[in-house]
Image (cartoon, rainbow, N blue to C red; front, side, top):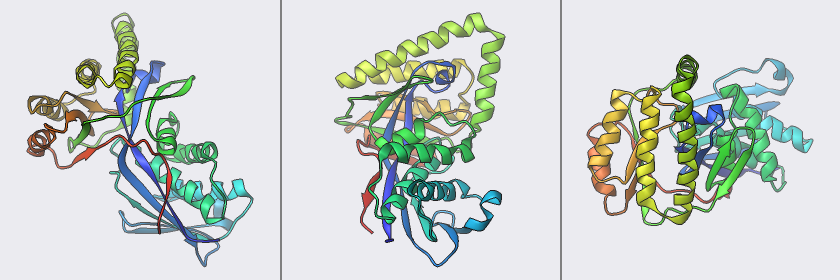
Length: 322
């Protein structure tokens, strides 16, 4: 067994959040923020998990497998399940160093689970099968999210841009953002995904005849956005982001803080902007040209505690030098 290092990308939902829960399509993209994980042999009868970001060390002993609990349980489960898949088991230390803000809707836990699984396979001298890496990370994600959609682990494993519909799986889109970037700005308000999803479904069940056409329109928008994305028509893409934000605002998941960021980005010259993820807090995403990037970032900085300017990452999980 040897020490190895792998990394996997964060994701951002570009179109279709919330509506995807009820069977409409969504588009998600891997971005250039990454979670780095090192797996190495350790003198322990279990799995040591150390997070550089949290300054936290936890031990998960093999003998106590049924009673495991802790903040980093999903990471231990990813490493353990990878070992089970190989039919090998020995003491390891997993060290996490992530650029992805946790609880941001950017798939932080999935990226860490994917990188952990990939690095564990490699530590035992096995070439990782990406389908198996994604499957194991999905199992680990259940610890964090209960019923994950599978979007996060798929994007973290394969990278690029995907279209997804519940029950139908994933389609890769041929999309490269040439000459444009994504700017992500934090509203400073933590989000509660479960609460927001519940609230939206309550609204839909109360006014089905009003909301159903909106859901249908949101689905049509995603199909149109996929076409524009593959054509490289960024101006149309930006306008569709604005429309998608209007839909999200209509179903009640925007907030004053998010609206201020969305409109500040547009005023500063973004091609389009919208909240991303569950809403109620969290981040907005703006599509910007290289020429306008600085202006948009500076305008958002007046309102946002954290800003990331990122590119779409065509690469998913990959090995890294130690």
